[in-house]
Length: 143
Image (cartoon, rainbow, N blue to C red):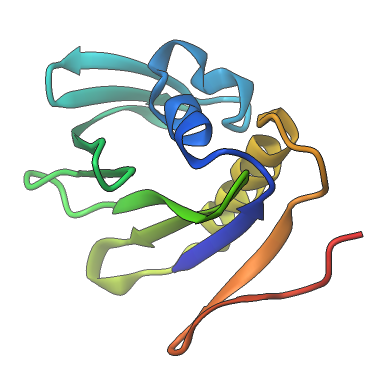
């Protein structure tokens, strides 16, 4: 599953928000807490219990990847793409165990992206994007 939002905000500023573990609760849906477990791992406190995930931050490419080799559950990445001056796109890609898709997880990602749009320092509404073979295209026009 891939979900993307276009934001009229600086890519570096948005990436700093995404990687600031102390303030993830400002844009993650309620019921999830995240803490640094060690230099390359985080622990997530979810309604169903705690899980640990390897976490790699690529500052040069504005990308965060997470996953677990020990458990075959969700892994993924979030990347901030520079689209122009004060314009970026945030792309979330998730892969479940054996390609499973969960409507609840899909809804959670949508709510997280919506909250990120509300929290990011933007001047105009965010626009949902669709990832196609030819690249990113707007799913609807900005208001």
